[in-house]
Amino acid sequence: MQATKLSGFFVVAIISAFLLMDSQAWAKEEAVRHGSASQPNVTATEIKVVYKVDLEQLAKKLPGRLMVYRTSPDQGGESQMEAVKKFFGSESNMVVDMQKASGGIFAADLNRLWARVPGFNDEVPPLNRKQILAATATFLYEINGNPQEKTVRRFSTDSVELTDKEGKQKVLPLGANITYRRILNGYKVIGPGGKIKIFHDSEGMVAGYLRVWRSLKAESVKPLIGVFGARDEFNKNPLGDTLLADISEVNVNNITLAYLERGINQSQNYLQPIYVFDCTAFYKGTEKAEGTRYTRYVAALTKQPEPLWQEGEEYKSDRRRKALPRQSSKVQKMSDESSQPTSPFTLEDKDPD
Image (cartoon, rainbow, N blue to C red):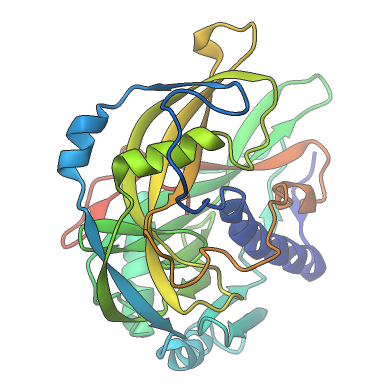
């Protein structure tokens, strides 16, 4: 089987699907507002909810109030765009997109970003993590794009799963990504925004850049509904809009706080905290070992200055895989858990980027 060269049309389709999926995949867990309390472990959908985390201890650990931030489009977006164009140069097959709603930018060299899908019998060398980290550092220095705030950094890979005529499968690398996330008051900013992401090709060269990094101004400290208020809201609809059916039991493994930032093409006035429920769902009539992990979000403020998501958003399935013009291949995302943190950043391998 020969290696496949993706056309610019297909790569643009992949990029468009990726950006759309990135926003909508986060919107699938749209949080519900805090209302009247319900009994713990009892839901209207008859799904048993079991808390594996000590709520009493968690209530003592998590704050009762948290800062809310006023947001505005990224003030550095335009200058970043010009710097990125200069970095890639006139020889690149470049596409650049800037969204006024967030001030965010996306740029890619179509000659490199996911531009070559290897064949099943191709010999593809492993990704060189040190080279990729060095290329990232050089790129951010050249475009003056290093985040000034406290961040967490994640290394992940894109790969393609191939199947030959005999049904044998093989996973080969397409490239790697370095993602930076903001840390505010000790809590991570999650969602389709609030990140700086550098894409690399299979040779470790910088191939693309995504920056959704809204400017922030501290607004005021607001009261939170608390762990037990979040529990009551969660119990009303433990699955949210997660695409799961025939679930008999949900285990809540942990509850944390985070800030939620919207995607590159969405307007946003406030950066608000949310409760993040790490859950495992179990299907009716199956063993506990066959559970499905998912994440559910619950609004944390007693009074929201604006909805967490724009009206009319809905979850769409991951269309990035379907954009690849090869029926026997699919894109996977994997974290490099062997990576080590590099000062002044820390490494996080569990957050989707």
